[in-house]
Length: 192
Image (tube, rainbow, N blue to C red; front, side):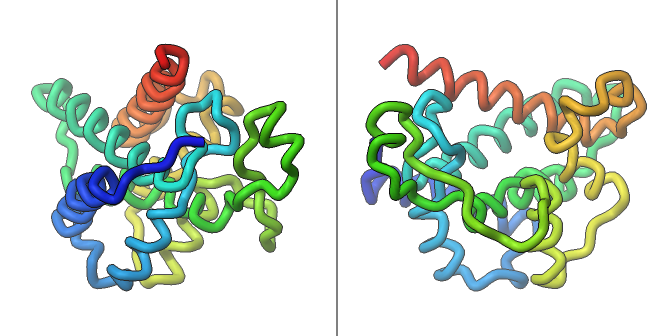
């Protein structure tokens, strides 16, 4: 299983925290606690995703955020995107994975299936976007209707087929940036 070096994590943290400041989120979180949680947080359950290792979550969030910012700039001539809202959703959408994924204690599944992590036993049957909203609101964060929709955009991506054409542009950008980041991360694993 891959591990980020301290230097790699620190570089990712500087990017993440810089965006966190721009989004106005620093007042809601204990910086040291969040930093420590992200050092150990996985972005997925299995190795084939490319983001199933301690520290992978911050890498995914940073890649996904950078892609979302690029898409936003590409469509800026047609759509007005609030950068603070875009950053807010990008930075918060996946934070529930800090709690949802725990190291796998089944050595056979780790060795033979590459499942480095498993789902934690948590209250409620919430998808990661929903759980991230729950986590954020317990910290006092308030979402606009469009931000809320965008936070859940990956939860609904496979369920709503035709409904994606009725979604707000923020949701479209968030969903597309996520899909591209996941594809890039998965491809990087194949190339190694």
